[in-house]
Image (cartoon, rainbow, N blue to C red; front, side):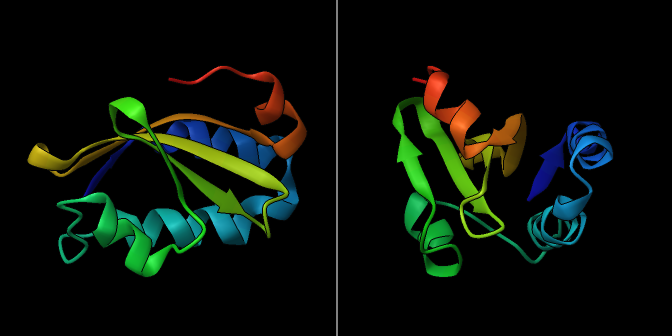
Length: 97
């Protein structure tokens, strides 16, 4: 997969240092040529706690669900766009599709 916007992760890590290992591990695992997500089932095999919303939004739990990573996956082009990262409390106040 090709993960777009590592900068969003880097900026978030500056604010929340405790997320560094988890977010970078997710990024390096997802952003490889050997990671191929053709359907939501492919993601679920590796990330069983991932949540799926309409319009191909996928929510990943970070650090035991303390943080949420919101992405939009374009399965046909093998692209993952990082849309937002925040605390679980902040996520609860946001509206995603």
